[in-house]
Image 1 (cartoon, rainbow, N blue to C red):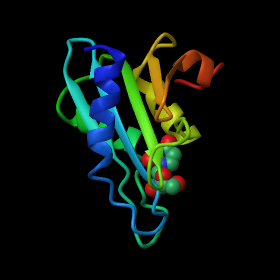
Image 2 (tube, rainbow, N blue to C red):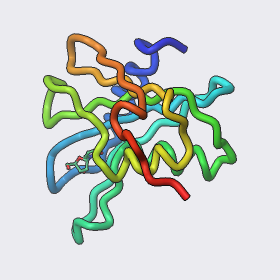
Image 3 (cartoon, rainbow, N blue to C red):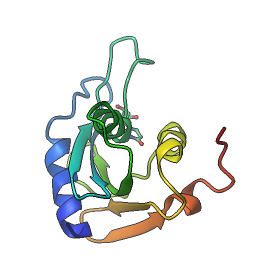
Length: 129
Ligand code: THU
């Protein structure tokens, strides 16, 4: 599974986005160390705060399925077409840091190119018990 394939899976996950309030559709594809992929989309709620981001949907689905070792995630987001990079929000970075090491890769796609960061770059000096 290379980063292009993971981005394609994130784009397909985005098709299931439930985002009637923001109209902003996000998809994520999370790759485990043993090669499985868990997809996630954002799921909004009329009370707003229960909204779940695409990245956390993917992480929680994987954890619930017994997976705990992750290599990379691809994230794509946008209102209509994908035109900009959609980096994970602070809450999602913190959730990723619960399960992933600093070298975990985060692939972002803006419709043209893939930019890759490590979790250590996006969440330096993270808090973990
Ligand atoms: N969203 C994500 O799914 N992931 C992020 O990292 C940032 C934001 C979603 C939440 C909400 O449904 C919409 O994007 C607009 O904030």
